[in-house]
Image (tube, rainbow over all chains, first blue to last red; front, side, top):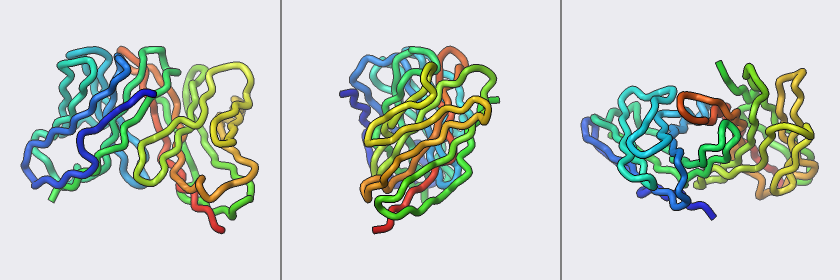
Length: 114
Length: 115
């Protein structure tokens, strides 16, 4: 089975800190995604990557950046964490099979910014 | 622009009762449609997907969904709900964005199951 692993289940950070959320997948998927999940808003796409060192902005990229130096690892970076970035963050990966590719999700990182 | 609407934020059903969760989409071409389930404390798991062909799609855990192009709908159904089905359910449409595909999600429907 595909495994998508997010390094932390829970994180508490202070306002202004630089925060790294790490995601690793073990199925050689080209595509990787970072979503943010908030009650009543569903999942919103922050960034995605379709190859090493390649990235594209999703719907809500402001305040975030990403890094993909190796195919299996996709990092989400909060340059200066703010309280409105308190949320559940979900990583996903998939093969590049067009719009119908099945995405595999990690268990999520619940980030609290105080 | 592509979008997905799940009009029901929260639904409560009795165990053994039937279930229908609504999903409407907006997409210019033939859509790729998905239903995902998120159990408490878990990531998202794919229940079923529709690409083409038979408009009634069978999934895991006894779920099915019907694609109705005329209504732009992809409703999820289950004839008899079990307590373990309590979870949040997300409808999604697969869209081409930039260099690759991406999923656009609805806001989710939280299902509670009464004994």
